[in-house]
Image (cartoon, rainbow, N blue to C red; front, side, top):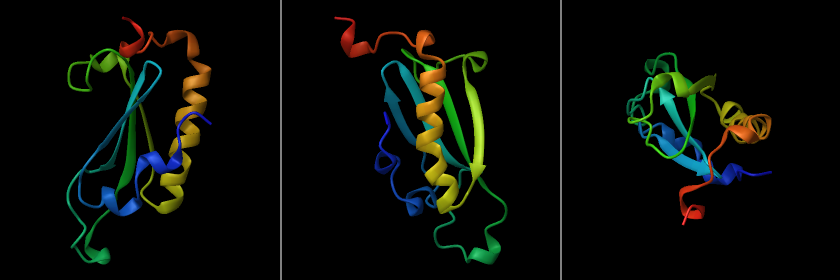
Length: 109
């Protein structure tokens, strides 16, 4: 396994409307609640529908500086189980596209 599921933080982190950014050997990714808003103190019956949105793109640029056509987006249920599916998905995606990832920035020196 390339990406440790613990790296993706605890489910409650995403209830605050904050994204998580990570990278692995030339593959960058973002995990966030969609819609990305703070619902931590909102009663569960008033939170509305949501999902985890995972965005993957190649280095070297940030999410904002990468053209949309270079990004891959996948959604998962906004549940503990959905969060548990994300690390295996990222691993499988990395392996399936191994030849597409540039050398990591720290390895280009």
